[in-house]
Length: 97
Image 1 (cartoon, rainbow, N blue to C red):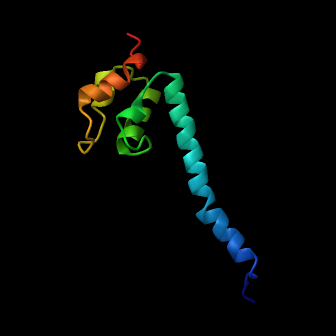
Image 2: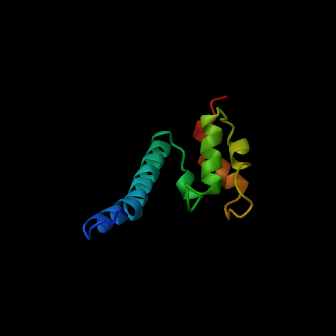
Image 3: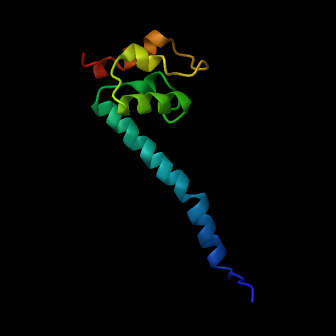
């Protein structure tokens, strides 16, 4: 016998699969931006999408222990419009050396 979900089950599953992940992702991005603000790293000022390729690369480098703003700026994708100097300046407070 094949399972056939009722009319109320399908919309509930779609709401979990379709809407909640984006809500969870936006909450995580907001928490990440708040953490940047608390560390006085103004990455959102120079990157349009902190959770994009460049933002993710910078976050991974910070988590790996990198603190040099110039090296962090070097992790950005070539499509980023901001200059490497602007990106490095936005994260100067994370340089502890």
